[in-house]
Amino acid sequence: MLSPRLLLVDDEADFVGLLAKRLRRRKLEVSVAHTAEDALAILADQEVDLVVLDIRLPGMDGLQTLAEIKRTYPQVHVIMMTGFADTEMAARAMSHGAVAYLVKPVDVRELLDQIYAAVEQQPPQSPPPSSPS
Image (cartoon, rainbow, N blue to C red; front, side, top):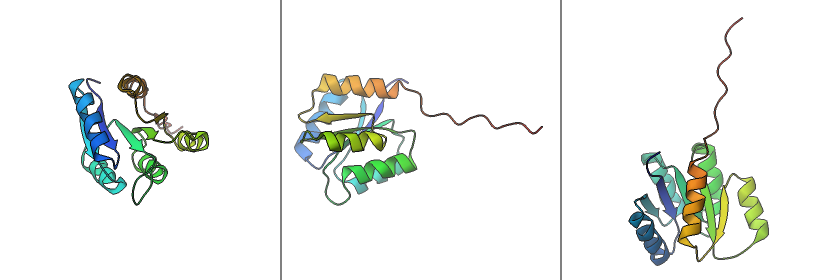
């Protein structure tokens, strides 16, 4: 994989704009959504390797969005982020398929480490079809 294709989802426009700019400087392909609904529309239209998803969003929250992403796009990795350190929420996110849970303000180097660790994992493989006997 040359460069991970990312989708950043956060309703804080200034925060996500700055984060997108910093990631693009590192040659990553970045799309931005401010709502869960916009994020799901982007996923339906573009190939994305990894979503960085805020927990608290207007309308559909981050955990609901995570569940929908994993149901519809199981190959897409998701890193959750939040402004609130909450171990119960982190455990719920991880049990729903998130690969990491980060607390804002996000250190870009730590985020990059998590992104590359996630996309270097191989997506789940289906077993080969069994041949008729």
